[in-house]
Structure formats: C-alpha cells, structure tokens
Amino acid sequence: MADMDDVVLHVQTPLIYSAPLSELTGRDVYCKLENTQPSGSFKLRGIGHVCRLAVKGGNTTHLICSSGGNAGLATAYCAKQLGVKATVFTMDGLPQSVLKKFHDLGCDIYIGGSVWDTCDATARKFVEKLRHEGERPFYVHPFDSQAVWDGHSTMMHEVHGQLRGVSPSAVITCVGGGGLLAGIDKGLQSIDKDHVPILAMETHGADSYNKAIAAGKPIKLEKITSVAKTLGALQVCDRVVEITKRRKVISKVTSDAKAVEACWRFLRDHQFLVEPACGATLSAIYENKLEEYLGENLMEGPVVVVICGGATMDLNTLLQLKQQFDISEQLDRTYDIEQYHL
Image (tube, rainbow, N blue to C red; front, side, top):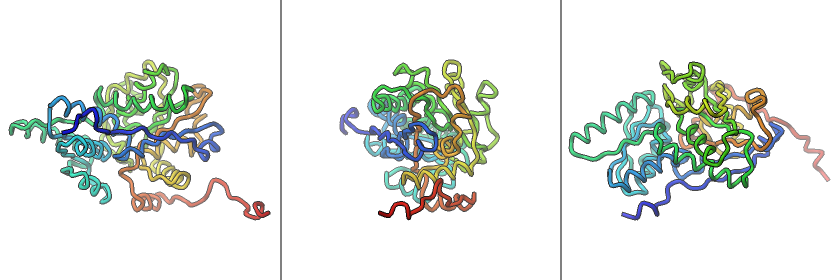
C-alpha cells in the first residue's frame, strides 16, 4: 500500500468569476467549484481527511458511511484510492447514474431508508455487527466530527489565496447536517476573517437549521419533504448552532421550485449540472435577494458562492424536476441581433 500522505484525495478547485451572477447582483460574484472534486462534491475534503487518518493509523481496512449520496461517493472514492473496502448505506430514490458511480468505485451499497437518519442507524448497526464478528470497520460520519470540519476548512484557505487576501463581503452556502457550514466557519476563523458573514440557505421541507436558529438549539424535523434530498438531515449538528454566538450567520429558506430553477439557470449560464441543494444556495443570487437577506451585514468586496456539488444530479432528473415545477425557458435578457451586424 502506498504511503497514505502521498495519496491525492481532494484537489484545489477553481474559483471563477461569474459574469452572469455579477450582473444580477451589481457586485463581483465568484463561484467556488466544489462540483469539480473527483467525487463530485465538497464532501471529499472532510471525508478524505477522516478516511486518511483512519487508514493511516491502522485502525481499519473497511470504511462504513451513511449518506444522502455525496458523502458516500466521497467515502467510496477515498477507499478506492487508499486501497481499502467501502460500504455505504444510502437513501432510496437515487438515479441509476449515481448507483453506477458507486459500483464503478467498487463500493458495496445498500438502501438504508428514505431519510439519512434511518440510513445512519442502519449503518451503525452494521458496524457493530462487523465488530462482533471480529472485523475492524471504521464508521465515517458524513458531517458531525472535528476532522470533517478540519477537512472542509481547506476550502476557505484556497479562497483566501485565490482572492489574494481580499476579504469576501459574504460567503453563500447551503446547510444539510452542518458539516460544510462548520468547515467554512473554521476556515474563515483560521485566516482571521471572523467578520465575514455567512448566508446559509435551505429549502422548505429540509429546513432543520432555520428551525434550530429560531429555537436556539437543534430541532428534529418529523420528516423531509423537499426534493433537495442531500440537505435531508432531520437535525443539524450542535456546532452550527454554537457558531452563531460569535459569527453572523443568516439562515434563509427558499422553495423547491426556486432551487430547481436556480439549477437550470446555472446550467444555462455555466454549463454545470448541480443538485437542488446547490440550487438553494444559488437561489439567493438568481432571486436577487442578497440585499434583502444580508442587509447591513453585506460588506464591500466580492461575494463567494460555494457550488457544493452535482454528483447526485443527471440531466434526465433535472429535466423531470424542471417539468414538475413548470420552469420556463425565459432568458434574463433578450438581444436584438440586428444591432450586432456591421
């Protein structure tokens, strides 16, 4: 087996200037393309850090993860690169294209339930079963661990270098279980950017963070009704409630329709397929809500939008969602071709 420190897991992703999003907002908008990670999402940063530590420490040759899709793909990718086995418990309803990705990575995959929490309970039982049989499996939590947050924090280190030290006016992201938000906060902390606000977006029916902020503590949803299944943790981790005591985190909720529309418009603008969780993030821009959502918290400087991933989306699924929510083809602006003739 290769030296664990030499195995490349996550990569530095591009931070691109978005002319369409900048025109909509009247300020510079940059997209951090985490959808270009080898596993297709930001999850590879934190999951990769966890998996490397586990395998390097000789703790396991079998990684077990519960996932709405992205954490599982990250675990499967890491296992493949690190030369160990992976088993993932995921939710039903995944597109065939996503199931193929798991199989291409040589991962054992099981449907653990209709929501992540059920998958997680099933995965933990499987871990205990293997331990009882004398194996040494390692359970990979998809979002609630210090090592996961440490891994995700590298994203902000990269942004700092790519912006040449210029402070963002805000970072826009989405929230599922809270691992990405906790990692962004930690990364900003480490580069002395505690003053930078974070806009945390969710969809109705997967808005466990918004309800936690209102209550001042994690609140468990009865069920997930949103199409943004990768936001589908019934309850966020404690960490993302705690960080609001020292950083301005603005929690907002959008509709499934607006999230899907944002996915479609981003595909048209930047030729990237992203999932509704990312559409929730982008909806804040496409609905031109930055000023309304952030108010006096919106400072001078570029806005950074985290494009969290697209691994669980394919074109057929997006077209079905587009039809379901009756998304129009209307462009933001039309152009008179005649004016461009010499």
